[in-house]
Image (cartoon, rainbow, N blue to C red; front, side, top):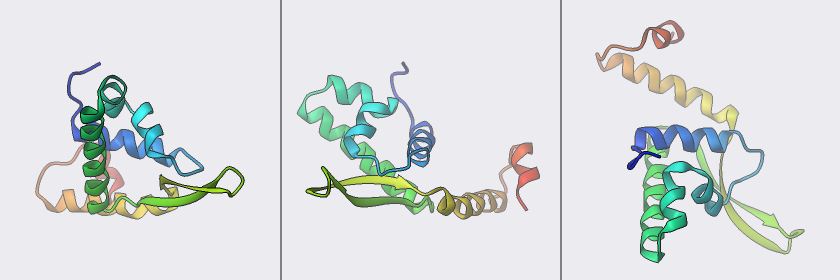
Length: 121
């Protein structure tokens, strides 16, 4: 496993994990399942876990700033006797921000990948 996973690698992993779920995902599951967080989360002490959680919070805030509709959701567990918080990205809400990101890149003057140029209108 790579020593440091960059945020450019973490973001798509987080998006892909959340968009594939039908129910909100608790943060503990994200920490256990996503490679960018899991290694340190599992092997680290309290200080390391706090650092991993801050990394996730930064990633979440940056994705939201880019227009990714990452929602924090409160939901019921244990037959409605308890509440929990989780995260989700609804597929129908992700489409338009994705197009906006492509257009923004096109205006920046940087060359786009040919596959992206064909798909941006």
